[in-house]
Image (cartoon, rainbow, N blue to C red; front, side, top):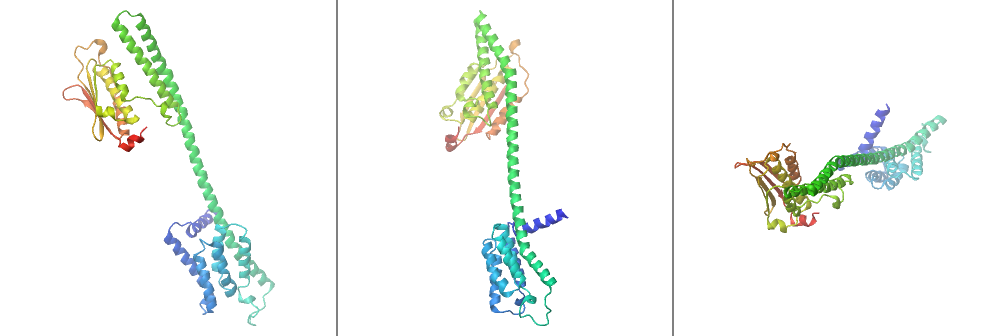
Length: 404
């Protein structure tokens, strides 16, 4: 029963107070105005024209009760006390007043409505016909109780609607706060996981890369063969460079959110020549003057750098000894990176034979291209070897100026 009563109250409140449809709101107001008119009994008995004017004013007050609740209730009082019949308009406007303005004015308003209902029946008029019996104490008690209910019911109903609206608003605020707390907890969990990943990367990668750098440095100092010393120097530089990039990535992982711009790994077009020089691959690198003159956003430059880096790695792994041709050019709308190499020479030495690969590098490049609304195509060439083509849209002048 409690749930059914609550459902009924909620439906009434939604219908009369919280409907968002303007048409439905006007239909409800017109229905309530019709109830106020029908409650005026002398209307059917051709009452005095002054009573009709007062009832018309009370009916208009019902239509204006949403914007002017107190004024609407006051306008209905003359019809209530003059006609001694029109009470529905006062009840409707007082209920709206209690819902929208729950303050000290409700007590006197409810008292006025009770008094108006107390003297609205002909049985209590001084000039009642002699055929009417004199009211008894029980009649007075019954009518006084009814008047109290009529005066208190709209106030209680309006206050109930007001409290329910406040509870609904509070529930909405609590839901929003709970959602915000959940997001903060998720962010904290992500931060802890990022810190855990960074520690694992540091413990696994940096230790072994550091050992490589130390061993390469020792080999460079003790070797007598110039070729071996040059190779050891290259190995040491690569290990040190790997450690530096690893530290940059660890700073990004440990940073809250995306991290400040200075913590992001810096890999751009200006670093390509150094990357090609220390790769151990015969590289033909061409960057068109139009690309060099254009200030590319960091995200595009980093994607180009990683693409060339992956092409160098794949050439070393799958076609050792083969030259790599890299061309970076642009047109009016797109930046193009083309990299291709021939098949591995047949006279490749034993230690340079192709190494197995899982294909994750190219998959990561395709994901980077998609993030920039670009495209990456990679596959064997008809004339032999392997080719990669990256195409990403260039930002407009406005975007270029706003780019980081």
